[in-house]
Length: 538
Ligand code: AMP
Ligand code: MG
Image (cartoon, rainbow, N blue to C red; front, side, top):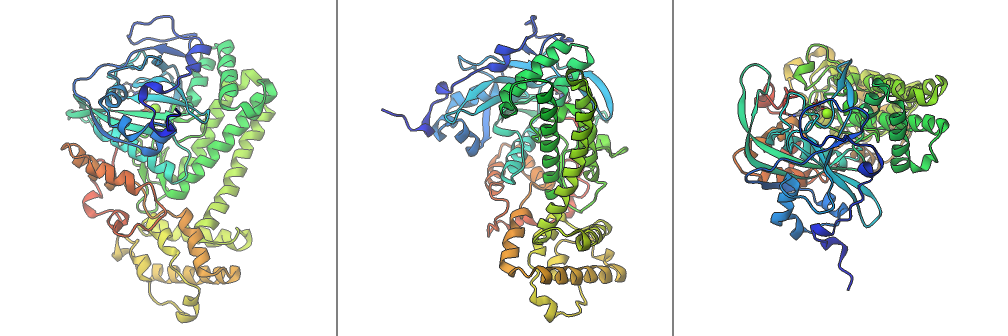
């Protein structure tokens, strides 16, 4: 009898642990902090916890693994994905990587609180690495404890799934489980540590390799191992590039430039700010990875960063993300240079990054505005003027673009000279007192120009609206929504986590009855920790 695919028990997951099989590991197996040379990983076991409780799991990710609802709700599932029990084919390990943090080489970092359980091959032949975050220390934990708290775990779990449903490349999250243990955290590094509930997220991705996995080997002069890891990566995750060779390495780098540029364009489209774009947080597959002090733009502001650690330099603010993407790619290029030994391919790929970003940006903005196609002659100015208006007066980015679709072409005739700001626009404005004469004049002027531009395209309103609503989400994982779910979860009530998970599965749909989750940030959240200010402490 053929068992239906969607009802496989946990024990039937098929593992093929290629990373540990093909690459050299650390010969030491004791779990103490150390520098790990000439190796890509260290074997390490998750730490057992006292009383795990399942907070939530993602249906779409369980589908990828062909797990049934009953399996996910079984005690074994919770035990395995908190790290208390291993399935027989699991070979847990932590990876060695380094990174440039805030512009400086930081040496060995590594999976300090991530433990890979193994690589599952699903019924479609896809490879999915399962990784626990917060399951205890590893040789790479440095001075930290290897743990994670509930607030940051809920943020990672919900945001990675929200990003996926927005159509943005990302690592996925299978589950989040509380451990029953307390974890001491000084949230703002200001001498006020507090006990918080511990939790473990199980992340899922085809690969968790970062730029930093390659950088550490180059920095140590371990060129042979660097080549081994690059060849492994190409064979495993980029087989379409052909067998490894210096030419293949160049094409590989070019592809990373492409995927990184595409990922950051998506972030810019939806107002996502990663918050810590260190090279150890850059996925080799161009996936959004390591959800820490990230945030979503409320008021449109290129200088905004949610990360208090970065409040001074604003290196990782919204508007700087495209530039930092390239800066990080330069660091990766330096790392793999010894395998190619030519400047040109790298220079060309880095130039391509800029070009793709610029083209992509123009197309993305045209899509957000509902234009048929970007036309530099008219649209450069239209877009620049709009961004200046949005930046000048605190305007909710998500609501503005979503509501802009409500403009109808007949409005031009009806309100030949729009005197006042339309209601849909007022819904996006945070501070009515900012809307002075000058702004009103400029904004109504812009709306006229926009309507005239739409007339030239002459797309039916409904067609344009439908297109705009596919790129301008109604629901994003607003910072204050995350905080509401966390506040509740910390009292043991996980209902809002479940409700938001459900809501964020369809971010582009209107979802009548759910409008309370699409409104602008309430005033209580303006300066509240966790809503507008986050730190790396999680
Ligand atoms: P992040 O800023 O979260 O990307 O982390 C940078 C480095 O610090 C990575 O090597 C992490 O694994 C490590 N790290 C962060 N938090 C912890 C923790 N609580 N315990 C151990 N290592 C950590
Ligand atoms: Mg990280």
